[in-house]
Length: 492
Image 1 (cartoon, helix red, strand yellow):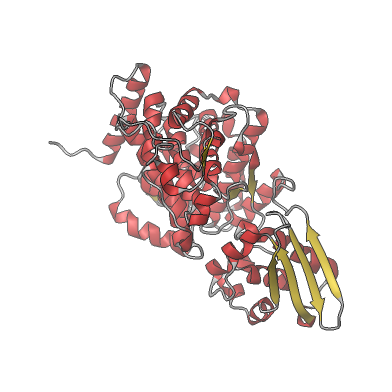
Image 2 (image 1 turned 90 degrees about the vertical axis):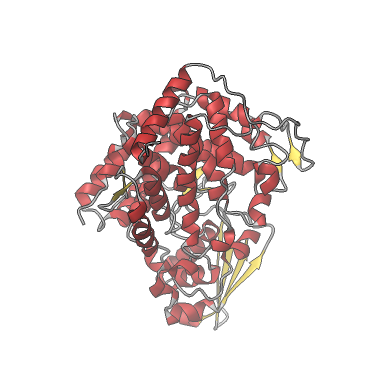
């Protein structure tokens, strides 16, 4: 039998997809003969969840997207792309690129902000690492899913291989965000509390849906894509604070592409891989609310709830950092005179960011002690404040020992209550109702542009940065969205 290279395989799969989409499938599904009983932990009807979702995805068009949803899709792209370019030279990205390049297929897709090109799936993985390693990407606050971190690298890589209009790209991106976040809603917080990194485990569904949409899968094929995504959960929270955390969205990006490609060739699976008794939701979570997946499809959009980080660290730290920066800027605090810093925080803060003695920049992104201390000393919470330098600064180390967090169930996820007590008995207080970057206090378009430039300038010349920003804002008018990743390529 002749050996087929990766480009030929992709071409064959795409051709098969287009042909199959034109007519009805004759193949039977791989669904188990016995109907799964309703989960005791579930809510809402748990039948045909995968099929209902697939049917919606196949029929959903760009023209049906409300204006505010389209705009958030574009903002999600611009934000994530800037973060990925900013992370493109991180040690984790260099290691991944060096390790995978000898085994990569044809040079099909750009490594963002770099000169190298790899095959589609390896490029999606590496760019997924780059876009998450700084912990500066987008966040769906209801689930702490980072949808752009998985769907962005997959779609951009695939758009370089298969010509995709800007409108097709935005529609696929929004649908991918919708799927990842709705499935995340259905199992959060129990699934997350068990230890799964929900960005990878739910995000892979969003990638399969988005790439499946570009491949024009029919309903049965989209069911297969979602089912194959269900078989590839990736990411454990134990990885937080290490390079492994960014592996999770990178792997989910490549796994979702893998699922869509196989589905396009009619690679079968159960028709109920999300909701079956031994399917994804029942196996990976003690909570299943299937109404979150199917109710209001095409009427309410999770994409409008996506948020963009002003600080490159765990999202739960943002309210406390916001408070510390405001206190420092308003009062010019002499940190040597601080006796203690009392925090009232949401219960998730200590669970997710309770590292008292972070050893390096990656670990400091998950330390409420570090985040508050460095924000008070330096009056900022940017990349420099979550570097190896800052994590090892003796002044920061000394002050973080005076940070005293207390869990308060009355404090919401985007809130923080900070009181600074000084050695002379004086105090300063700040309560954050809604942290900067939240749904209620979002970053503006200008903020996103400044963030992009802060991250990308120096990796790319300013003129190149401006060109890429302009292409993102105008993506809906582009004949080929694949021109955007190609425009980030560098000569060095």
